Amino acid sequence: MMNFRRHRATAVRPAFPSLALLALLASLGLSACGGGGGSTQAQVSAEPAPPSPPGVTPGTPPASDMPPVTDPTPPPTWVAPPVAPVGDEPPGTTPTVPPRSAPLGEVWTETGPVAAWWTASASGDGRVMAVGVNPGTLFLSRDAGASWQPVAGAGTGNWSSIDMDPTGTHIAGASFGGLVWVSHDGGESWAGTFHTCDFLSVTISNDGQHLAVVAKFGGVFSSDDAGASWDERLPAADWQAIAGSEDGRVLLTASHNGTLQVSTDHGRTWTSREQARNWYRLAISADGQHMAAADNGGFVYVSADSGQTWTPTFHPVPVTALSMSRDGRQLVLAVPVLGGETMKSGIFHSADFGQTWQPLAGAGAWRAAALAGDGNSLVVGARGEGSDPMLISPSVPGGHLFVTRAGPVATGAASVAP
Image 1 (tube, rainbow, N blue to C red):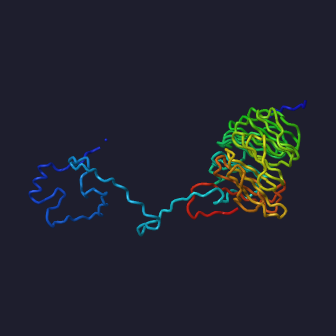
Image 2 (image 1 turned 90 degrees about the vertical axis):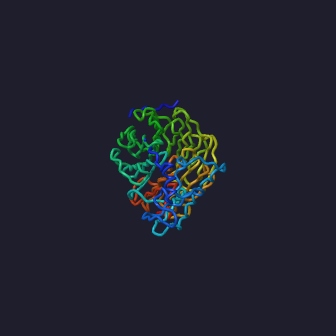
Image 3 (image 1 turned 60 degrees about the horizontal axis):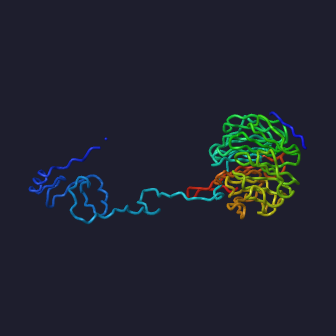
């Protein structure tokens, strides 16, 4: 048996003339509206009254003040006139152009500072986003990527991974050669936990209590007390990634030249799944049923039964980021430019559980990509041009950050294509 280590780380009614007065006015050829009979015309200075609905005589008092109707035929139903189409507005008015709905990836906005981006994460609705520079600091956005603020509480480091719960309240960040940093107040304050290690990937549950990390050649570790203490769950290997269901119960890990490992009890026991490959990036649905795993330089594989069976999809490429919507239906992956090869590079999207894929962005030194839980928002980041996106450091600090969102946009909205 393998020995593992434990670590602590109120309304007024309108008045009308009486019937006697009306009879007197009629005998004199006058009316109660201020004008006499015959050819006498009223002089008005206001704008003409708007047209009455069909079937209603202009100047008629409200129905509630009129004598009962004796005609058994019901009045016709009034139908509002149609709205004039765009372009037929009266002169001097501004045409009203309704917004249209754009799909994910049609309209892009460049945002944030220029840096060597490495990792990203997004909340369920995409309002909260986090990105990490490697080497550098973490940046946080609470307005869907419109603005970003550096996270001072977690310092600087080689940020390798970020994860957050669907509300963006509980956030965890892992640093290569550093600590695991945790925030339970939406990034306002941070605490370092565990000891220094070459962490490559981290996951955190929706209540912030369950965390799991992998360290390159250091093992798989988990915590059930918000990071106060840690237990070694799998021994040292060339671990690359870990992903967890929202409740933290289902965990999926990957290593280079090893099999995929699945746990359904918060990491206490594990089952080997799929054959040994050069596994590099992972993604998982909220309930742990749908999974995706990228073989570095090989296919992307998907599972719809919590990892029991796997199906290859996409074409063989190096994948530097893999992200999934909460229901598992949508996936996004990043393929960087390597060695001058640009034909297969880009950001790609699937809306059918990985069966088919469409490009959302062209070639670049792509490294980070995070899809919001609802699948309507996406943030992507690149390393500096000329950098090898597979290397943690050093890097040319010239990468750009972009966001896109599916939904209403103004007609003619400008897009900055990544």
